[in-house]
Image (cartoon, rainbow, N blue to C red; front, side, top):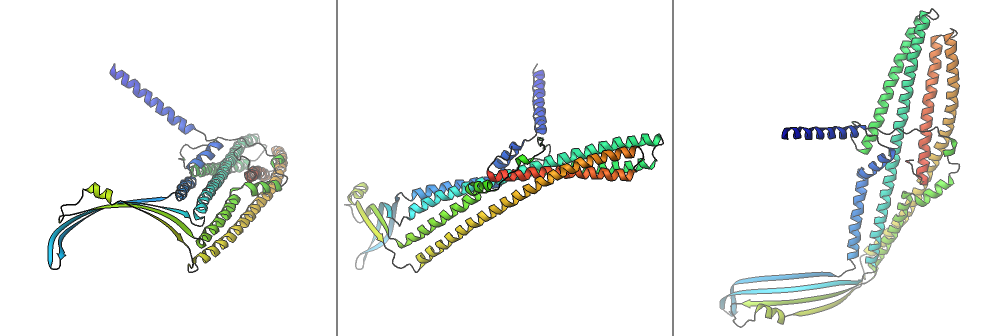
Length: 445
């Protein structure tokens, strides 16, 4: 009975393992899953998240500067050896000394340096958070691009397979016509050569498709073995998804894009650095308090009080108020302020540079999208014309009014038109996704 139960348990475990492995191999990644996984596991994202954790510790440290500093010390010393009590008279003396002290120091005023350093720590964390969002956005766009590239290569593969199947059917028709004496036997060899070329095209298309899957799997940092994505049916795009005016995109991007906000935060940071540098010209006011006591014992006396009695009798308190007024810092304060102001100018230039770069990218993307739309429309018309032309060529070929070479040329023109349309479609879709990216629309939809 026990052996039978063990077998049942083993069978159940193996069944579960097979089910899990089958599920893992059969999983198809959706676009949203790809984007989310990339964002959660990307090394640059994790590094940026660690930077935020460091910033939080800097904020705690900056807050701590508003609290007083407290230090304590306990000391014990032992002295052994001869000591000269009177001139020429030495005695063997041992001594023990115990000292205890505690002190506190608080900076009342240091030219608002602490306040500005705390503001700066908060500002740096905000900047790091914006930088993290920018990294996430860039990763999302890269994943969408790779995903669309898979769909593009998948469609090219399906087209290549369909063309191969068509040529296979065409070869059989040619053989039938040759057997009927309508066409010469040489046409069979021509069609077989065409079929061989189509087979090679299928192989190339399969390789490109697998390479695009490999690229995305590496971007996601997941094993390539068994990796696959959910095929999204990209509808025939239309002019309706194209933006008519670039100005709303620019306005939104200038107000919301991470690179612009980071540049603006850098200006604020530079201004705070100037205020921190100016604090070197102002006095520093500090308040201190100290408490100390000690006890002393030697073998030369028998009337010394007990340890705790001495510690209690010799207690002492001290208070101090100090004002440090800078008079001449060998130009260090002056040059610090001057350099900070130069950094302010540089940060403002960096903001203008970021705006110009962003505007150039959006202008280029908008122009590319417009060109992609025109290319797509032209490719659509071209394919329609080539389909009619190839249909007419087939009819002429079947009645012997066109030779095999002329038919093959018509077929090649049709294949090129189909490839051009697929290229134009996905190029246009991605270009509009880039514009969606700049205007803040979800690019995973």
